[in-house]
Amino acid sequence: MFVINTKKDSMFGERDASCAAENIMLAATDLGLGSVYVMGGAVRLNDAGELQKELGIDPAFQTSVIVPVGKIAEKTEETDRSNRYQVTIY
Ligand SMILES: Cc1cc2nc3c(=O)[nH]c(=O)nc-3n(C[C@H](O)[C@H](O)[C@H](O)COP(=O)(O)O)c2cc1C
Image (cartoon, rainbow, N blue to C red; front, side):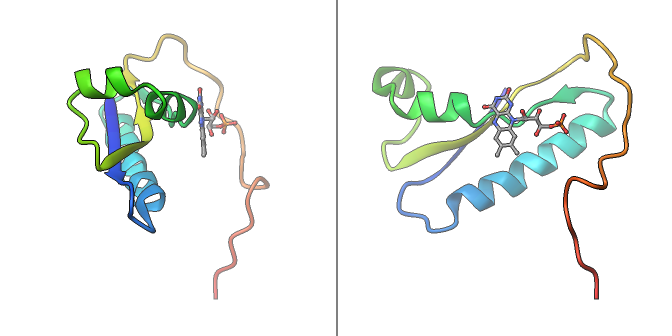
């Protein structure tokens, strides 16, 4: 499990963490592993001071994204998701 922490005073911390998460997820996929971008757990962890301490998270940092990686339990069908986003290429 990857817990991606960024400086609390960083203006772009969440974006940086998202890019790191994406790289982890791409590498995991390449290795045939599953992964998920978890924001809910990150928000909860930031409210759990004792747990943060136990995990060795520097008080100047906060958790932006958690990425659990593991063996895929169930293979889902691949679908066309291209209509979900709009990317304009010039
Ligand atoms: C910003 C963001 C936050 C997310 N937070 C969570 C989360 O807290 N828990 C979770 O199980 N999945 C979380 N996900 C993963 C989504 O639930 C979903 O699995 C992923 O976006 C793929 O969606 P799709 O399977 O519909 O394409 C998050 C995804 C994004 C982009």
